[in-house]
Image (cartoon, rainbow, N blue to C red; front, side, top):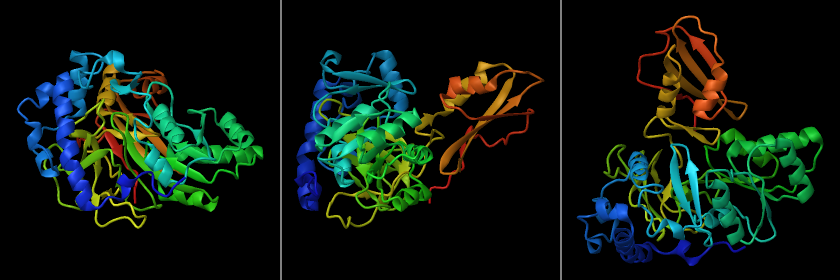
Length: 408
């Protein structure tokens, strides 16, 4: 393992701007010429006029809702990929449903830089606890693990006792997955008297890493860093030093804009994250993630020179990630529509013992005895504490998802 994954990470500002002036118009040209959807979206755009961040800010924003609409009109991928669907190696599905393409090209989702920054490389055995089912998280991470020369144990999610026993017997040295699940594995290992002391590194994503969780790993001698990415874009940014701003990956361009617009905010102001990917196969241009963040001033002490973001600061809409899974307002609306006696619903998200807790409040008309636990799990795809109450009990504030977790 080398300190830096490649020379792109340590470019000067002038070098990065010069490279961008070539890469950005080339990607716009690629999108216009090879993607049916972007032929329409960027119809009026001359790619030669888009060679800087200022030029990019003049282009339209692509939102998830538009992506869903495009995919419904032109299944399965909405004509957004730069080429025919038959050339893809994989197609994934995320909640929505939203479909994402996949390729088996080396580090196609760009997760290797984050892994390298976390000290993971040749000689490591990495327990990959991201899901391999439907969503691309497992394969996304596996490609990066292989790209840095490490060995992957494709563990996936769940089965805590088997996870702990395998980690001990295989001699796992690193973990990758959602922040909380490693603690669950470690606790199970302690309960079973297993030796998990070889685990010294962790790279976590798919949800916020809370300070107490990171501290508990540090107490066990585990360096835990976090990265930020999406199923649509792959890796976007990553920590190189614990509890410092995340460095933007060299394969994407990040903008922070006023939510609901495409207008950039001032440095340090929280806004919505827009990402333009330089991936030639899937050229998403000004894709609105719905996540809130802000640019951090200065450069990293690690020597990498790209811009930094402060990490996840919530959602531009009420969509919230709970236990690594998105819960969307549309799902709550579907829950209300599921049974006529449900007048209103509200999802509260809190933390307890370093774990996410989802409480679902249902206003019920009349005395109805139903298994609302199973209905909630079916509609929200997660288990929660379900509580019923009389009509008029819930606040009239427009919220259907109330994230009460503290991220500082």
